Every structure is written in C-alpha cells, then in structure tokens.
Amino acid sequence: MVRVNAQRWPALLGAFVLAATGAVLPDGAVAARSALVPACLAVSPDSGGVHDSWSSAAPTTTPRYFLAAATDCDGTVYALGGWAATTPSPGPSDFARSDLVENYDPGSGSWTTVPALWSARARLAAVTDEDGRIWAIGGGDDASSGRAVEVYTPGYGAWQATPSLPVEMPVPSAASDAAGNVYVFDGDETAIFDADSRTWRTGPPMPTPREGGVAATGADGRVYVIGGYTTAEPDVPTSTVEVYTPSTREWSQAAPMPGPKGRAAGATAPDGRIFVFGGASEPGETPTAVTYVYAPGTDRWEPAESMPHTRDCAAAAVGGDGRIYLVGGTEGDAVSTATTDVDVYTP
Image (cartoon, rainbow, N blue to C red):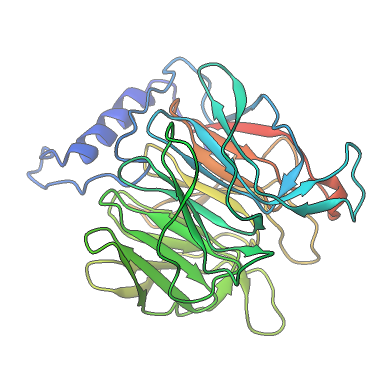
C-alpha cells in the first residue's frame, strides 16, 4: 500500500507549478511544460486531507458505462456519452448509446447537465486541449464509423464538429499535451492532431496492438499507453506499457503493470504519478477493485489503495481540487450493474 504524507502536497504542487511554467530547476535543467491536466488549470489541493484514500461524491443522474471523462480550466469534471440506462431499474437490454454530458463542480459538490453531444456514442475517448476545450473522440455511434470528433468550449453553447480522425477508431484511448496536440490510439493505429496546423495525421503504430487501454501524458511530455485488450486472438487483458515520444516519433517499452488490466480507467495526478483503476483481468471478465500507480521518473509500479467497489468500463479525470474522480462503469460482470457512483481518490 502506498502512503503519502499529508505534508507532501505543498512540495508536489510546487514541482507541478515549476513544470507548468517551464521554470529553471535547482540543477539548472529546464522542466518540460506540464501536461498532467489542462495547462490553464490551477490545482488547489487540500493540504490537510488524508492522502492515498477514497471518498465519495454526488452520483451522476443516470447509470452509464463505457463513458469518457475530462476536466476544464475551472477544474470541473465532465462525464460524456457511454451506454446509459433507459429505465429507472434497468435490465440487460435497457441500455442505449447516449449523448448525455454532465459536469461536476468539486466546489459545489453537484452535477449539472450541459449541451449534449451531436451523436450518441459509447467507448469514446475525451481529452482537454490547451484552451480548456473538451474533445469527444471516436467511439461507436448510430450514425458514423468511429471517426467523429466534437469539441465543446465551456460556457459557449453547443458542441462543434472538428476535422475527423484519419482512420476509424471505435475503441480509442487518448491523451493531450500542454501545447494542444492530441494523441489517439486504437488497435495498431496512432492518430495525432497537430495544434499548429489544426490537422490530423497518422503516427507510427503501437508495437503491441490493443484496445481499451489507458492513455496518459507525463510531465516529460511523453504519452503512456497502459494495458488494454490485445487485438490478436484470443483477446486478453495485458500488462504491457508502451511510451510514445512526440519529439522523436518513436515508441519504447516501460515497466509492465504488476498484473493485466483491460477496460480500466486512469489519470495522471498533479504529482506526476499515473494511476490505473479497476478494469477486468484474467481469469474471466469479473471487474476488479485493484489500483496500480506508476512513477515515470523511476519506471516503477506499486499497488495503491484499492477502490471501495469493483469497477469496470468507468472513466477518470482530475478535478481542480487535485483529486481523481472515478465516474460510472459497472460494478459486476453484467451491464445491469452499471452505476451512478462517483468514487474520489486523494493521491
């Protein structure tokens, strides 16, 4: 179990601010501009809180799984799309792709419904760009083939279409960096949105084709793709971790997770560690409550505090309070166990 001293937050936040501003570190090295959360987000953690611990937040309005999550500049957490319940007491057939978007304000502790996606879809990915806009990327829907990309500017009304993905990505994982570039992975495909040219291009394929993994950007600007289901038969969860370096356009290997995970949720905490929550592992498809944490600086994985509930097909994002919000998903091996629960992890 990883324990973090409550006094550690000020030092961690200081390092985060240094990285975010490109400040010169004591040894003379210049830190990469942070890509842990939107560059416009000022994280204000509670230094007196209990760390490496779980709590709960207000539930969402509707049980959903295979949804996505992201954070805007104000630290508000968005929950997008997914398979949503269509009845108050849903059975296995009472779910449909959803265009629902809700956001959660950690300050008020409440959820608000915001403009819906243009198209209902599940298994989508979500990221935030350098201006705090929320991107809904790929995923399956009733109208297109998984290439659709929509962008929402908080406070400015409806979602807007943006250039489509260069390839079909029905089960994508995605991450963005502080410069506004967006990286999307599915199977062996890599798609990269260049913030300067405002265009998509294909990138080098992942060495290990997989879907349903966790994508997260480190403070070093590299993108980590973690776990997921292999696309080769039999499609099983994997512990593989591969790292994409944008400056060289090359992939490399990182230390594997302690155990395989598919359909997990994950996020990069303000201190730079990457957390991976729940998902399914072999044998079987039963969801797990296991949490792993990765330190990019040392290339090491450790177990963290397990979730209060098993969780599969959920979504995670960091709020403005520095906590990680785990939203929706299923708590058992049936879709009828989809939940409105929101569990909150304090790193």
